[in-house]
Image (cartoon, rainbow, N blue to C red; front, top):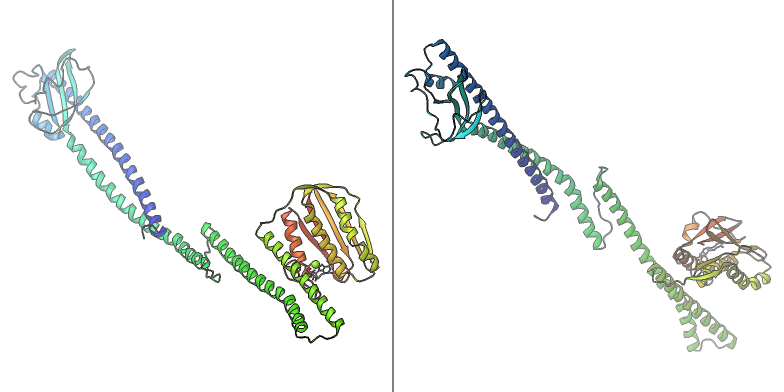
Length: 454
Ligand SMILES: Nc1ncnc2c1ncn2[C@@H]1O[C@H](COP(=O)(O)OP(=O)(O)O)[C@@H](O)[C@H]1O
Ligand SMILES: [Mg+2]
């Protein structure tokens, strides 16, 4: 539970806020301490200045002197005096400043000096301001006004209490917020984690939470849904691929088996029929071996375990070779077979594989073009691409079929087609860094275009 996001997220959030509050409080307290001390010093300075003025007037007017204790009562601070007697016989009311603390003669005239001390009759520490008392340029002595530092501290304590109150309040609000946030974040996260668990177990039909917000979690949920759909699709494809493979392998095997059984049981007496049976067996065995080779190719391409050569390939010569391989069939079937291979690009690629792709396209064109039709092979080199086009006047391919025919085992060819030719051609082209495009007008013909980088 302590390792879950639901706990860690708000805990981290709260810890951060608590730390920020504590630092802010410490700074505030420190500032307030300085401020309170400054205020007190200023007040004490004013009082000390007032005292010197007051007693100056008294001496000048020889009035009845103030009793220091009565003054202390009105200000609330202690009043000290050290020096020459101010009035004959009337000096005793003052508290005496301990002489080891303030040197009466050394203090600068006309202003207060701040100091701290602990008087003999009290064990508290006092903050004090001393100010020399002079009349007619004669230094009589020093007045000092003092207040216990504890009084300042009392002020901080109330501040501290308020700060503590604020911190607790702030933390409560933050805790509420953190709880809300963590529920908002970790709720969908937990659902996503649950969905991921299900997918890991191979169950793709999971319910992925719909997070409406446009934030990262919403994005994650969307992508996750897409990923699950793709995985399901890939899984389905793999299943249907395996089904098709076993079906395709079984078809020639069944034919071979049927003929072999018939031959073994001596059902076929006629030597001519027997040789026909043997022909079928040989044909189907060929088909089987081709099929196995193709499936292996496709599987390797799919797993990227295909080794491709990197050699300089003269594309003109290669096209010429592919072209010539079919010229005899074209002549026999009265097909108008042309080539346009004026371009002369030399590219670094795997020649055998390129030949395999082009031959495959030509083979399809010859398979689907009726006798007397037209087939063309052309080579172009432009914009950093080499383009080999195979045109035919076959039945063409409808829009719906254009993507489908590139899938494994999709074939209209009842006699010997495996439906792997275009699938392999497309995978090969991709492995060579290129692609196969298809343009077609149903009823008029097709054009398969192999595009390779040069
Ligand atoms: N030039 C073409 N004209 C019309 N249809 C074609 C052409 N090439 C391929 N096709 C269609 O695509 C299908 C798949 O082709 P392919 O992958 O080579 O397998 P196969 O040749 O074994 O049928 C063919 O069965 C055919 O229906
Ligand atoms: Mg084919």
